[in-house]
Image 1 (cartoon, rainbow, N blue to C red):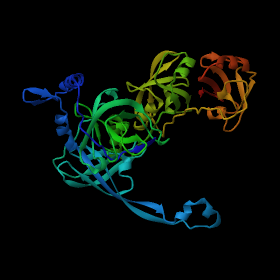
Image 2: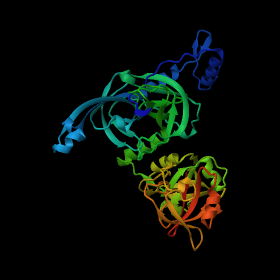
Image 3: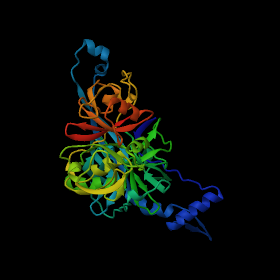
Image 4: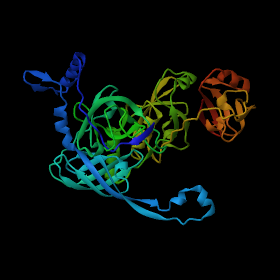
Length: 465
């Protein structure tokens, strides 16, 4: 299975069968004042929402050029061994299509995906009434896959933006886009999951909404809306083995898209924020190792010197659970939340330290936040008599207390888990260790745990699996 960017959204009307389904949908839509009156019997229908929001969804046609090698033999390692081919490039013309959403009718701002307009030389926007407008790129941000276009036109319709932090798994959603060039196709479904990261790029900032509303190539940049007719996400990609819909689609949350848009409009680029922490997801094993009952959050394994986090009082071993009053469930969610904040902006960080909740205020610095997650697996390292996650580390009892890491084999489990030469292991979770035997006893039968490490003048945590 692969993750593919969608270029259209295929919408096929859903038939509500069965009395239970009709009652459920009727009651849900009634709250949103959706039922249409047919004769004397009200029937559930999404038509009022579609009629109101469709004018804000546009088709995007792109013409551009990409550089490519013209000598196919340059790709063949066999021929390259014997011949020195000159570097030859030529420009290949291409056409592509996608979707977009009008966010500001007065200014003509349109949200779409960055990959939709990548390498574009000419962009044409088609409205619901078949008007065609030339668009310019106001700014793009590849790390969030968001771009802002601008058009000049009258009688444009914009869509309202919902608070995507309030959406829940199971909420009904509607996708509107242009799958396979089929303009203004509508599909419906539910929110299947939140906080997804596809892992397509280590540099990406992903905290995606997953939906089973059918999404197909051509839907990229289209709208994912709720039953109030407000935007909750920008459709971005699909999970598929053949390029078609299998019920797993992803959308950039509206809160992230709006934050990125604000910066693109004001600065022409995103001034990526930095908190200055290395983080990983809080798992049950890590929570148990830290003696906490928390089940969600981002575990802080290290705090950079002189960083915004250090100045705010954040410490290694803390569990970050919220940003500006909004919950943080995963490390990717924290990375995404910090990554769209402006440099110099103050942010309230909710965290748990030694089982007690705290709040600190940090001032975002310029840079790019990082996520550190230890790799797993046994690479055939020679055992040092301890947990397999420590294999490849030469350990000795430290005269000043703790366990000294004398050396670390390159590529070993210990190296992959972040251990370095001259580290001093002082605790497993919250259990102090002063010898190799105590370290072995403390890690016995554990699948994963944290190590408190003294590295020079810094204290940090390594996640061992």
